[in-house]
Amino acid sequence: MNKKEIFDDELQELAQFAKAISHPARLAILKYLAETKSCISGDISQNIPLSRTTVSQHLRELKELGLIHGEIEGLKINYCICSSNIYRYLELFENFFEKVKEAAVDCEI
Image 1 (tube, one colour):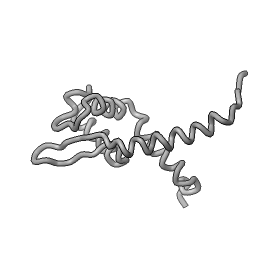
Image 2 (cartoon, rainbow, N blue to C red):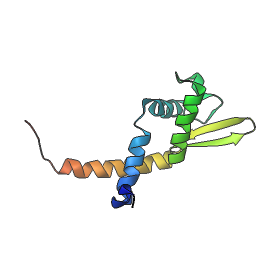
Image 3 (cartoon, helix red, strand yellow):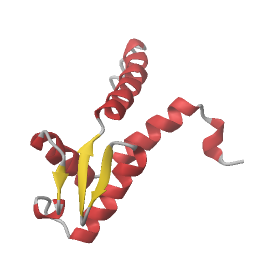
Image 4 (cartoon, rainbow, N blue to C red):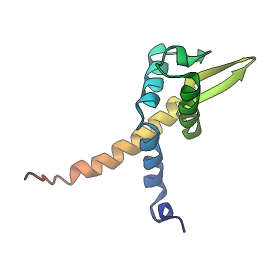
């Protein structure tokens, strides 16, 4: 049995989301796509200070989790933010931390 399996699906999803957004490069990619407010065609690495290969690896991570879509159009790939998945993960995150906040335990030393 995988130790992750002892945790419920929601906690596993939250952990995957947190892992995906835990790298500054992936946050920069999401921020860039959000700021453009459209799908991006072409080489995102021109706008992110990393090599094309590194950017591709981070794009793959974001795509696997469903935070972005990448559709091939001819020789180019169009990248878009998947807002519905982002909203779903944010709602899970907010619900989780709302319960944590409600605990109202103050650990002042």
